Amino acid sequence: MRLFFALACPATIAARISEWRNTLGIDGTPVPAANLHVTLAFLGTQPCARLPELIELAAAIETPAFTLALDRLQRWSGGVLLLAPSQPPQALLALAERLRTELLALGIASEPHEYLPHLTLARHCRAAVAGMPPTFAWQAGEFGLFTSESAPAGVRYRPLASWPLFKNS
Image (cartoon, rainbow, N blue to C red):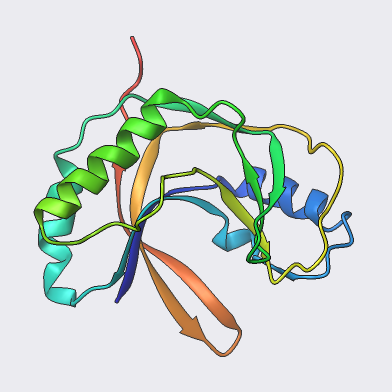
C-alpha cells in the first residue's frame, strides 16, 4: 500500500479551491477536489501488516488544533502548482516533525528534503501562474492516514484512519 499522513482539505474549501484554480487557465493536470490535502509524512509503499503499528503510532500523538491559511501560489521546478502558507503554524510543523521522528524509529525514512507544507493544485504545469490567490483557511481538527490507489479514472486517496487534534484552551 502507498501510504501517507495528511490533513484532508474540507470538502467546502476543496470546492472553493477547485473553482478558483479552474479560473487560472493552467496548462497542467489538475488534482481532483476530493484528493486535495496537505501531506504531513509520505511513507511510500508499505506492507499491510504495518497498518496496526502505524495506527498505534498516530494514536499516541497529541497535538493542538490550528488554523491553516493557504495564501501563497507557487510553481515548483518539477511542474507542481501549489498553495502554501506564508506563515506555517508551529503546531503543523511540530506534527510533521513528530511523525517523521516516530516513523524513523520504526525504520521508515522520510523524504530527504525539508518539510514544506503545501496543497498540490496541479501537476505537469509548464508555465508559471501569476497573481495573488485568495486565502483559503480552515481549522485543522484532525489528521489521517491515507492510501493512494490507482483506478481507471485516476489516482484516488482513501482515508484509512484519523485522529483528532486537541482544541487549544
